[in-house]
Image (cartoon, rainbow, N blue to C red; front, side):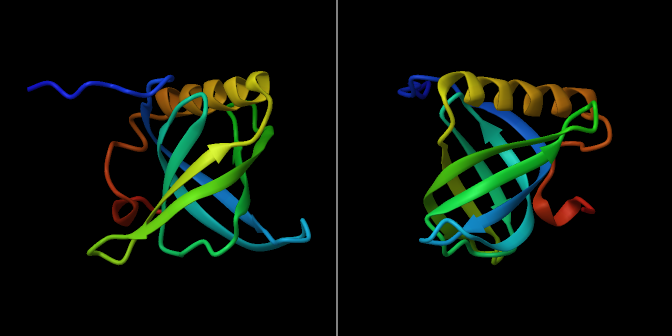
Length: 128
């Protein structure tokens, strides 16, 4: 039986290195780590990290094909640890609709441009 997609915006599979900065309750940036973006939609992104996120908000960053820093704020929806000790983190993008779409487009474009370099894999197989 085929799985029915219930999401308003479908997810696109990617495998891109991405950094995130945790934002504390006062809006200050605290921890910074690197993760891998696994999939993205107009509303959210799923990343995989070796580190648990304890803050409610994060700032996501990556360098696009023009070497410009692209960033957007997000709200952490879940952070779950798998059997391998790696955390899967779901994040709702907090930009305007246009900001979210631009972030997603650039992330997908970066992935397809570098697809041969970052063959689909897991966080454990990529050298960040």
